[in-house]
Image 1 (cartoon, helix red, strand yellow):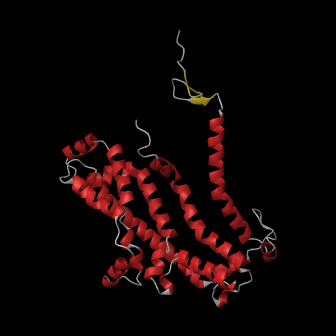
Image 2 (spheres, rainbow, N blue to C red; image 1 turned 45 degrees about the vertical axis):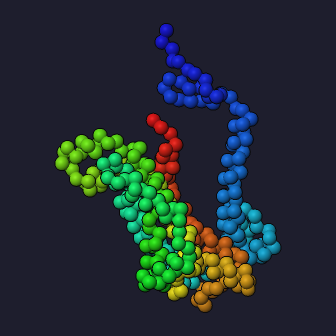
Image 3 (spheres, one colour; image 1 turned 90 degrees about the vertical axis):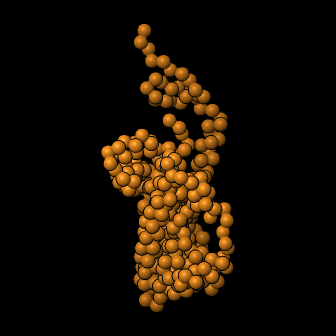
Length: 309
């Protein structure tokens, strides 16, 4: 009798071909699903609320009648924002800084993680320990400011890029990924064929590491895009301020004086609350648009080390 062997594991039937079907729904499953749904709603509902306010009429927004569906649809707030040259320039400038930061960050992360993932590197333990020190200890704000001043990086675009391109956390993730996904036998065979370390890195290691590269690139890009603290500390010139800092200034001015700081050519016809919502949407949407292109690799990358086999 050639019957497929099936076993039941915690309410799920697992057949010999690897397929699995849930045949029993328990209370604990319901609780976990409810928690996941609530966590998702805490991220989605505020975004929907801002999106609805950004395209709603001022009258309905001021009367607090807009929840998750727009009323009196109008795009005056977006017209005002895009007519404001300073915010448009800040968006373009932020994209350029984010792209440069992500590219340099991944280059530094790869150059640090690849050698440390190899057993043939002498002193690997010492170098790993030394490169992990910044993860636990920092000099503080004042010494960092004085250092940037000595390096002539204050009020300079590179002060937003160079100090943060090395991330011990990202390096550790990439190192662990390379150790678990790239077998030593693959590199040994490449060495026997006469390949150099750089050839192995660019022709073998990196093509096989697309999931972790996509994941860390997203970490770098989101971290740089959302950060504005270093803008506050190190930047004074308006043309060097990123979009998040511009948004923070806009929200602060609106909360303090019920006005939003836009240029005279912006033709402001919306209330500060509507303009705030529209500005948040404009700053948030670009980074969200990147995720669908990296989702396939991102899902694989976040599972690094979670499952063996």
